Image 1 (cartoon, rainbow, N blue to C red):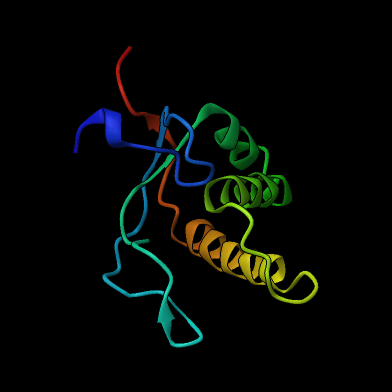
Image 2: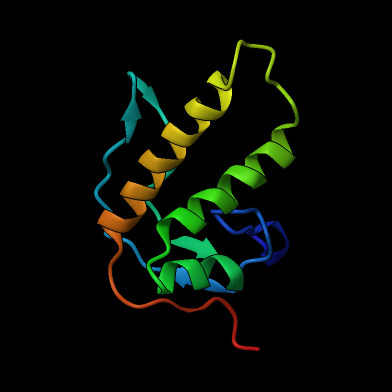
Length: 112
């Protein structure tokens, strides 16, 4: 994978940091559906890494939700805030996996 195709796993920005993870070969499921390729090291931009390093999980969740809204667009054709609540549940589940499998200190993606 070339550096140009790498994105922050939290906001899709330009990654600067790598967070090493415990690799378990487990598929993470939510409501009997896989929720992503989570069994790998994670990438973060400087901004998202700041949330991680200061243990601001709510700030990180808000940035991720905003990024999802931007990339997915307005799909809220369902009543009320059902879609946003569902997205928040998925983000919370994915972030729990991140925090529970984190294995060591972050390091720079590139030597620049």
